Image 1 (cartoon, helix red, strand yellow):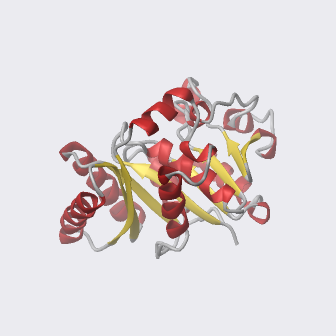
Image 2 (cartoon, rainbow, N blue to C red; image 1 turned 135 degrees about the vertical axis):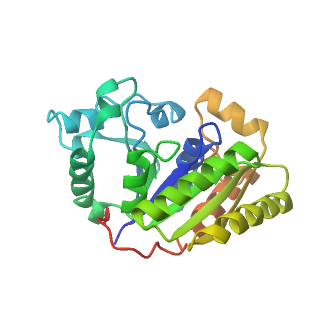
Length: 256
């Protein structure tokens, strides 16, 4: 059965979409069939990072002019994308009925993929909480800044108290060092678990890197190139470990 991974963050600008894109590409190069779903409706930019321009997006599915399969675009080795639609105000106002339509349509694709990575909007929006609740694994991306910690805590708290999500994986991005990243994760975990009955799992860290910033500007993700670079190996290792992360234990409508 396919496994769904929701990539989230408490605030924007912490590298959530870049992490989702590179993990999808890394899994694809490892031989896994991956669907990358941009759920940041109306503000979608996953396709921009991938340097592609899909002819159809989830907006076409929701307005009935295309099936969800019609919106799929090949973007890498074993990797396909469903774009979220950028600059479309109507997509910012969708309700749970529309979200259930999307989940139902995605569930029909499970025999064709091994993993689905969902790039959720930043913050504790209705869409983020809905899709995080529907995923097997929830990954929270944060950086070692007070505002990132506070917003990530607010997201985790909302997902746990409102949706019953029990397990979260945490990726520390833009880290000064691996050791510092682990220390920052431990601080975040201790704060969250002091007040909430949940579990946080360390997913690893991505270093502060000019190469990553350059790859974003050039619209050429790190994992779209050579797989033997240090950064590509880091994303690959994180993606591989994440596939075995504990699943959240709660009753909910799931993607698969």
